[in-house]
Image (cartoon, rainbow, N blue to C red; front, side, top):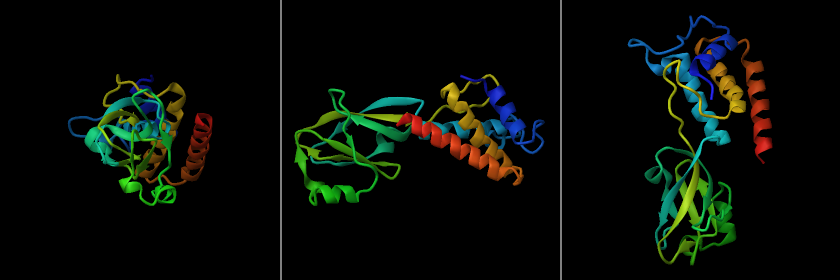
Amino acid sequence: MTPASILVNTALARARDPQGMATPAFPTSAIPLLSTACGLVSTSQQVINGIVGDVIQSFALTVQPRTLIYQVSASVPASVKIETVRDASGRDLDYMGEDINELAWLDTRWVTKTDAAPRCWMQCGRDLLILYPGVNTAQTVYMVCSTLTAALQNPNDVSVVQPETDNLVLDLAELLLLLKARDYAPLKTTLERFQARLAEEQMEQR
């Protein structure tokens, strides 16, 4: 957990604006959060957590008979991405990716297929969860989701992602600060560094 003051000062220094001339460091009564470096760092933390899933939470979902499609935001408004779905025994259901055609290839009648319990899941877009097959009687599954992290708003707030993830947050915040300041010269190098670091992090998670 890193104080927002350190993250913001580091991001501004990386973006060649250590005094916050192009982007103020923290909000005031006249400057809204999203117009500040703190707001951009906070948004970056939320985006990065959605990718790497440092902050996750389990939410119960009641599966209704013969219903295969569920709106995620209706059950879990704070969800950014579903990491896995587990049945009542704690077993992870099989993940089928994001291509709904996979279900059609598996079973052309998947929309009406029912069984004693779902065996697999798919997230379609950001807000739809598909459980296959449907169930004959109501039961509970658990969605494990990366969640929307709380906003950083003042110097004493602290990050909630893992310390090793802070560099990804700072890389993204640096990109946003450079774009906001229209300082395009370092963008290519910064973007390549961010992409390489993100690819390394995702490789380690596999």
